[in-house]
Image (cartoon, rainbow, N blue to C red; front, side):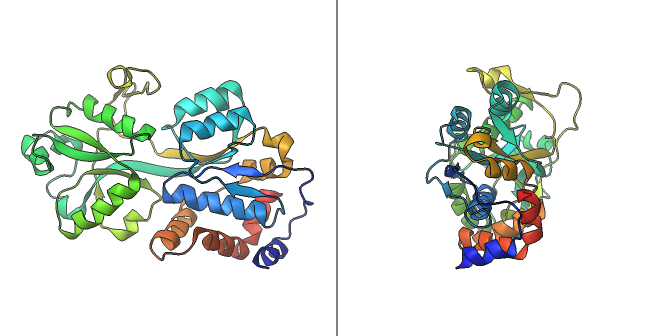
Length: 313
């Protein structure tokens, strides 16, 4: 009934998808990607009167990209493709093989953070070069401070390791590579105790509404300050990155095989345009208020028929 009402609210002029296949959507681990995935699925299953499924456990970005390239329906949509973090995927499948399409991107940031109660002590990467500062973050007593760089399979985790090496910090600091959910569970207790913690994060994300955080400043960008070769076997030795990140551009990527297998959905995915503030609202509803992502998606679609209609048409 709810899907019927939503379909009626979105006065789209496209007909029911004809002889179309089910769309397989990635199940990436971070909240923004999950929220986007549920919105896309709700648009396809509701107003578009087609069929989509978020594939449980389809969380490895490389496997999603390979599935989109094959075009066999095993993976059709990569819900939150961060660039330049995922440049290897982009170069291979978007610019190279031409088997993956993308939508209009939204902007995001990615930085190193400390809780604001640490900001007087640590406010820049220059501060991280002080042995006494690193010692404050040494939890296991091995003489090195720890920082969370992300999950082990994230490209951004490699990027931060390259940065710490390039800034000459490898002797003082070491990365912690654990899943996001594990880190967030630890972060809650750490901040409650007002203990030191240094970690990677990005926007949009609910963590910025949950805690008072301060980003670390870095060296400004200059020509040649970023040279990442994260697809090489010796990626850490071969790469350098000694300046601040550019703002990220973040895309929904999709298998171009959908242009034959489900043309209306391929068209819709190419025309989706997201606003970071909207995404942050979805994340807050899911993570702060504990709402079901599918309910958040359907409610937003019902209230924003004009936006959804612009994607479909």
